[in-house]
Image (tube, rainbow, N blue to C red; front, top):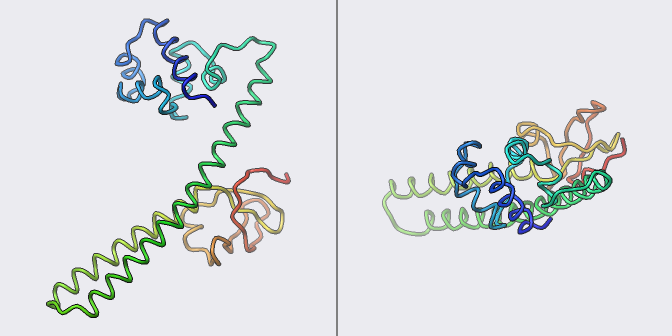
Length: 206
């Protein structure tokens, strides 16, 4: 997806509606800085406001994602192309998030070990050791929760019984027994429990 092209298209359609960036932002309850980022090709509109944005600009979501007006005879083909591109972008984003999770957890554990070493071997008052130890534990806990959240949201889990792929709830993902990224959970489709592996693609055997 060409973000520069999409940005220029938004700018053109905004001007056709005789709206400033500030006026468009006010209609969408966002900042004009966000609109500026779209039009500069630095970001895409959030999915939660795409429909409202398209109504204001008098375009379709498909045209927004394409960055140009689409002739009716080409519409269905372009819809399919845009959907494939969105899926591809999500998969790439999920892969990056899972890599960030690994790095974040490694840094967090290393930092916590360093804190334990300092508390154990450096001569300091007891209260200082307690404060430093609690601080180290809090950062480890916070990092762990962030990693759990990333692992829950990025990609999908595949049931080994019916091969359904889905995103579990945060609680389900967090408390499930696991080995690495493989977790023992109940499938929402077939209702059976199995060791479910993390996958990136939503392609399913339904």
